[in-house]
Image 1 (cartoon, helix red, strand yellow):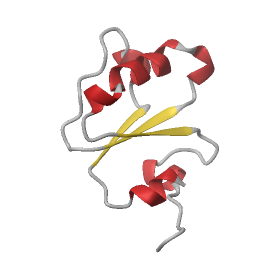
Image 2: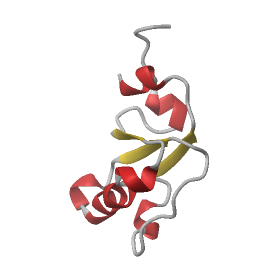
Image 3: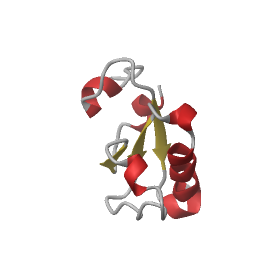
Image 4: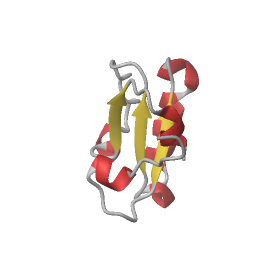
Length: 88
């Protein structure tokens, strides 16, 4: 329903206080997925942050050198029809 929020903790099976950043893109490469992933992987301040990626089913490859630090923190959700709820 309109105005409803997504419960990221439940949807991604994460502890309730886990910070989640939404990355929504039809073309993740053009929108800067590599840069977002590098930032997430390269900052100790962001160690607890998870990235929820919404878009076409084929995820882009992770940036070189960041795969290990992103393991388990990037969640590929594929195409979704509930984008307004995801942004809340």
